[in-house]
Length: 506
Image 1 (cartoon, rainbow, N blue to C red):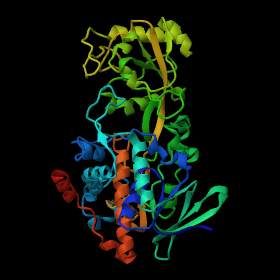
Image 2: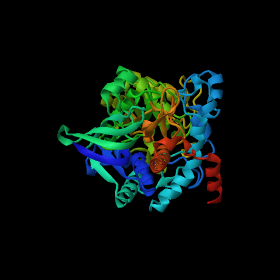
Image 3: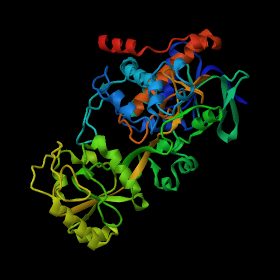
Image 4: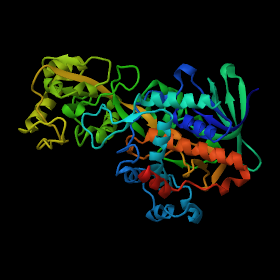
């Protein structure tokens, strides 16, 4: 049986797992990383993402960071229990210790740790800048690593390897090993040829969500979820074993297991993230040729998910964006169309309906009704112009310009599953909690496997969540290993206020 003895065994080689591995190894821990993908595809979804970061500078998160997460991290919960969750963990009543939501101290630590984490990554050679994005209109800036998620993966992996961290490719984590006291002391895994591996040490689960597992998607999201597909190739490696093995130990959950981060893509296209964000400048119609949602309720970066969810609700989870020739006059409009497939083009709306397989009468009537509801406006495509339809249901709140200039273009759109929302509950040291709200000794989690979001994703926080809590997991695991498992409870948790003071002075 292969494997070995380590201070920390990390399941997953994306930015969360690599951050845990590097942080622990820098602190002197012996670390192994298990990666189910081959070397050439290491990094899971991290290698494919542009890695938007919800930060207004390299040191500060956006002003709405904590509030947005707090407002979208639970369903309907008794307000008294939410208030109780704001108390120190050891003083909370039993019912509030493992609520399926992100606790205030978790959110506060998350926000306070972003600046120091970016500084740490810069020390590894990663560069950051405010670069152009696929969003033609934005409600706030987006910091990005130069080179995207792949640059993060390569920089962290290079540092890990330089520190002697072994990355075990084509090795899949299967089950946690515990001792008689209930502490996690190792991990069972499967290598190529179904060969068993056994690794001893504390464990950090960083193996993502379950968007690549059809059984789990159907179990938690219902049969309609069969229409979803992962946003990129890396998503197919995320099959939920990390979540399941922790649940088997009695881990607490957080986040909405019945939901996911939705993004609009062209179903005809392959590759990574063939997104279509041009719909605010046209109309969306379903297979009946009818509009079904406000295409432009706000800036596209802030509202695309709610629009995409409405697309997912349509028959077969399919819609079409219909545009006229004016969309091609919008500055840099091609940034908003990342599919590698050409538009469907026609000289008339009736001809376009035929090319889309829609009823010509229905689509002609829909476009005519929309055009009548449009009013003379000062079309400002890069600003929220407030040009709305009148007397139309559903309305269009911005950029309501008549579609009357041929040729007409259309793209099919479906909802892609960027990542699943349901996952494990952790504290502000990235320790996995059990269903009574107590930390499971020797078990950590980081990245998408941590459940946070309900209903609405707080944009540009997923990669940050992986980086921040991966680093916190690695640091805590290294301290635990140095001090001995009996001293785990004596390790001081990160002080958010201290981190904020560091942000302000660094």
